[in-house]
Amino acid sequence: MSFPAEPAQALADHGLAAMAAALMQSRQTILPKRLTAPGPDAAQLELMLNAAASAPDHGQLLPWRFVIVPQAARAALAEVFGAALVERDAAATPGQVAQAQEKAHRSPLLMLVVVDGLCGDAEIDLAERTISAGCAVQNMLLMATALGYGSALTSGKALKSAGLRTLFSLMPGEHALCFVSVGTVQSRKKARLRPVPADFVSRLSPDGNAVAGF
Image (tube, rainbow, N blue to C red):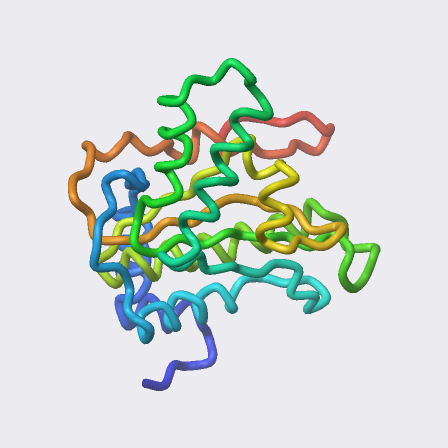
């Protein structure tokens, strides 16, 4: 398929803008406990990762990476989750520890998102690198949605634990940002009401004041 020189007009002419809007609006967070097998196959996972590669990347640092957690490694992750809870709360009950550990076994595809704050140009700060990672993750979520899968981002205090850093061999300057879960939707909640542009957009006036509206 070839497009004319004006990308925006090309999208409009071919209806791709409407398709893109429908895809983005259909994306919904599905909690990992509601994601079941099957997950993406190898070809579908490659599509998702290639989508991530389209994220903005100032200086072409590639300041983020994804670590897939296969089923064979879930028990090790579960131990980290349990130990991290006990480190934070020595009074945690066995049931609470088991609940923390169980989270490692949810969703057929589980990946850790890692951001590197030190690689490449030091002038490109951590916030910009994190934004790039966020764009990569969103691209992946949208591709997962297009493929018919549900997805979610999860975080938690265990991401900052020494045990997790050791398990994933994180280097100095690397930060565990979040986990990405992808799988077949077992059940979903009613879609939440999305904000409208007026809720989050203002316009800078010539005198330097922000004015509501766009």
